[in-house]
Length: 82
Image (tube, rainbow, N blue to C red):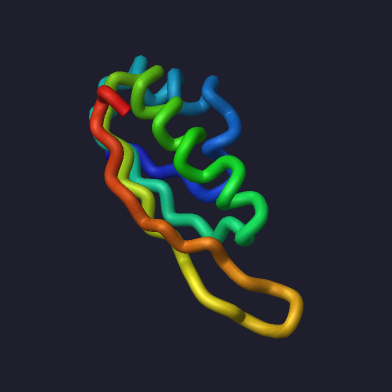
């Protein structure tokens, strides 16, 4: 089991290093904002799962935290096929 956090999903090299160590499941807790989540959350997680040929379990915080911050949510599990 590997563990990365939120912003790490943008760095494929980190995930490839985990794959080289034999990791077959990666947990990714995160709190993407709504605009960033809508644009990148699903596609980046799917890309990491496909590149590593592993499962990605992504727990995502959701909801409005104050007047300026709202998290996207959309927790998901991605299989090695994306």
